[in-house]
Length: 252
Ligand code: PEP
Image 1 (tube, rainbow, N blue to C red):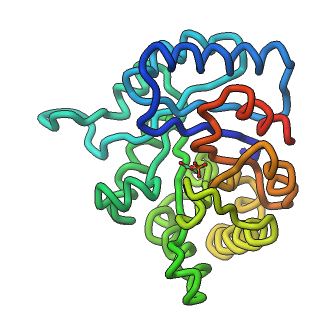
Image 2 (cartoon, rainbow, N blue to C red):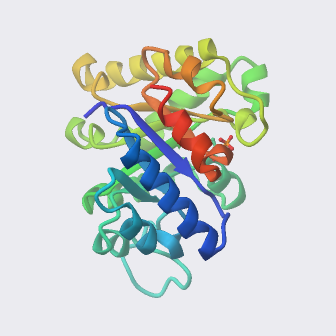
Image 3 (spheres, helix red, strand yellow):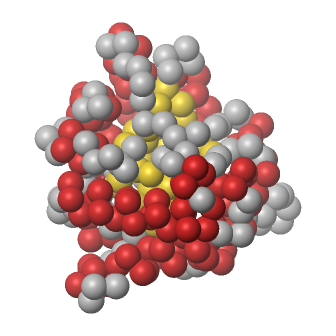
């Protein structure tokens, strides 16, 4: 169901001590400042999921993993399965982040498997898509991102599709300090929603939350979130500062 959502992606950052401090600060601020009308998720490194869940209990903050294996279980040393995440009651998992696509060669095809296994285990995938600077400068960005959706998601039923969240993250804006303008974000989100509507109908497309990610900061979040097809953000660097992250959430 479409909802406003802000997810922090801590990436491969924080020591255990730092993670506990950050998770409890975010959880306490969200609770004490009575934030409502927006789902708050912190996507922490795998080893910290358990403690982050515990520290978030009763505060409204949910936890998410940053990746999962496409395999259910077995001899896959170093991998983390969705069944493990499910057994720890982790509700969200980021799938297809551009860093995984780039550094770990994750293809649209592989991501279909991850999406399928996550949905089959009742986890909500936050499916990332987005174009490189080269693709944008060539004017192929709409076609490229729509193709990512077609290839990784369009095998799903409408019912399955409505269980996931999409995050549009232009690669040229991730960790670069260069944000897409509010107009560029809204324009792409509207395009993605109409691409979903062409395949699944308007009613279904209107139910999907589409987040924007790429150098979202407390000073630009309000403008970006104002787009009518922008339902929140996936926040990397700025989610490592509890006050800044909560200020981003409060931009709604
Ligand atoms: C991200 O990691 O998904 C991200 C958007 O990073 P940043 O906010 O640092 O650009």
